[in-house]
Amino acid sequence: MGRPGAGQTFIYLASQSPRRRQLLDQIGVRHELLLPRADEDAEALEAEQHGELPADYVERVTRAKLHAARARLKASGLPAAPILCADTTVALGRRILGKPVDAADAVATLSLLSGQTHRVITAVAVGNGRRESLAVSSSHVTFAAIPRREIERYVAGGEPFGKAGAYAIQSAFAAWIAHIDGSHSGIMGLPLFETAQLLREAGISV
Image (tube, rainbow, N blue to C red; front, side):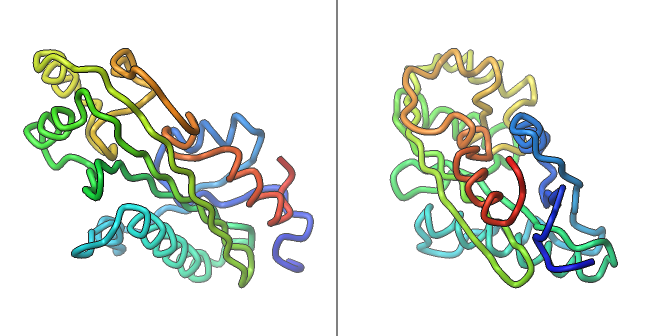
């Protein structure tokens, strides 16, 4: 199979996010999914540790996802290729606002973000052979004051579930975003500038 990264034409994406697939397609990166097996507890990797700061959390989770994906690839017998993992979190101050557990949690999260500026932090990591590289994108998003009925209507549509901070910037909820300072693709879940740099270092043409 040759040296990892030498003449590679594709990567493995260890993520179930359709947005990350779309963003890789946007920059012309061929990818194959490398998803957790049925016996893996992928959600456990995202558990918060007491007192952990948001930036530390997202870096730790991303590295943990990469290590799990590398073990998965080794056990699979699939051809060697670089692996890309990412994790996104929303932070209001030191508080981590993860994926909502139910509708009430989603409403509470969006009510906290209403009229406030929060951070969206995405870490992306690429494993290539024994080498690991990681980059972090941090953006600020400011929401206008959002009427409770609009929050409840958005939650009722099901969009917040499975998303850090209980919203998607590419959804209709973007109508309440007053200002963005940072990376739009990073807020979506994969900062393309940082991702492209890591992939070029891994020998992938972008």
